[in-house]
Structures are given as C-alpha cells and as structure tokens.
Length: 225
Image (cartoon, rainbow, N blue to C red; front, side):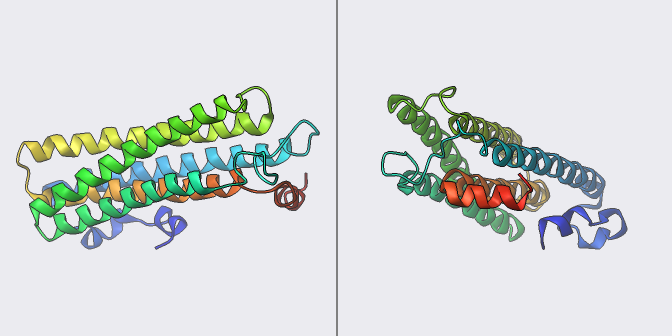
C-alpha cells in the first residue's frame, strides 16, 4: 500500500483489518496509527519544503553542488551507499521482527529488534563520522549553501530516527516486562511503518545530495525556478 493510500485509510471503519490483538488494544492502536499517519504527513511536508527551498537556492551563483567534479565529496557516492545499506538493513530487521511477533516467535522477534536498533545506531554514528570528514576537507556548514542543506537534511532525518529509537525503547521495555509477542505486534507494526518511511525519506535526500549541477538545475526548472 502506498504512503498516500495509508493516509487516506479510515481504520475506525475497518476494525477487522487491524493486526491481531485483544479487542481492548484495538482503540489505542487505532489512535496511535492515526497519530503516526499525521506525524508522517507533517514530516513529508517538512522535507518537501526543504527540497523546494534547496532547488530555489541552487539557482544563486554561490551554490556549489557537492557532486559532479572529482574534488567534490559526493562525486564518489560509496560512503553514502554504505550508510544507506545500514538503514536498509535496519528496516529489513524491523520487518523481520514484526513478522516474528505476528507468528508468536519471541526469540526471532527479539533478534530482529536488536539488529534493527543496532543498525540504526551505527547509521547515526556513520552520519556523524561523515560530518567530521566533510569538516576535515573544508566543507563547513556556512561555506556553501549546498553544505548547509547537507547538514540540515541529515540532522533533521537523524533526529526523526532518534525519535523512532525512543518509541522502540518503549516496546523493548514492554518486552522486558514479558509482554506476549502477539500483543507487541500492533505497536511494532507502527514502528516498522515509520522505519520504512524514514528509509524512503533518506533515499530522496541521498538522491538530491548526489545530484550533479545539471540535474539540480533541471529539477529547479521543472519547479519554475
């Protein structure tokens, strides 16, 4: 199901479509899912505005893209691909944990959530290390508008991932209190949806950060800049 299809759902009209769980847990789940859809909608609009302002700002002469020439850091995208792989593995591990919870396989669920958390944390650390490397190369936050957008986009994305880790920590606490896997399947489905959403956002950020000037200018022209 597409993200926009998810936003248009009416879960209060289709309680039978909700993940398996006690009837007493359905109402909180529906409320949490509605809240999550609302949050993802806000985050989507936020990043969309960032992308639009980046394309607009790219038409000024002081904007220097971070890819396109050998001396520019994202002409070689291998480091960003490595970080993307970490986030992809985290998302896949989260999905594995969710499927295991629905099958009431507690050990596999714990393994999936553990790997999802570990890969997400390593992704954030790898992003911080990338910041340090760019600073060491002289690509400071204020020396070029493209640099500023790189730090802004990666920081905002990282903060949202941290928020997801906090929510995952709440599920881990319930797991520590020996909550049954089938009960945790409902909140885990929300975490998995959020994880996949952040992966999608990162792929768009990745594509923009590694775009050559000609590509950025073409996108800006399509937007009327």
